[in-house]
Image (cartoon, rainbow, N blue to C red; front, side, top):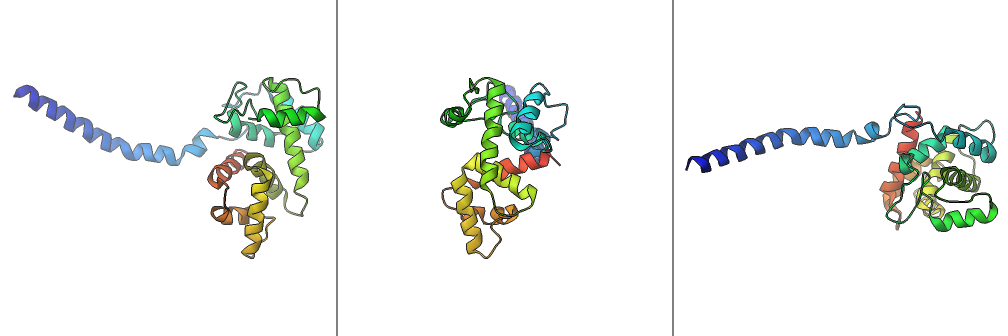
Length: 206
């Protein structure tokens, strides 16, 4: 009888402390973005690949372009892990699909191996440049870079669909905040993932 009473008492105590811990866990989850994605210059992030981000940003975007945008993107993609691999088989620091890398390599034969950090970064920045050039309409830089990263994540066509919905609602389809506001109404787009992705990058660059 004593043993049963003791066990019951232990269970009650454990449940009590679990309920006390629950709000703290919820608060931690709510603050996850800021905690997991500090500023791009944080010591949390390795500088090992910075030379590649600098080199290929200069090559494809020009000397005056801030290369840290693409480092921040790589952090959002893979936490700068060279061996990262997603459930859909996206690979490397920039999380490129093998098919995409293959297409990029046709125009850039020197990009030898998707698994090699240098070429993965080079290909990712080159792909960003191709997307960046597609967004030709006049818009502020931060909007243009947000459109670029969104199309990198979700595909160019999904963001074009979002533009059409934005325009249908009487909004300027070239501003990112308007795309965000209509995102839930765009069919076939996993908008929460994309919006979170762009937010992570812009937060790290603030």
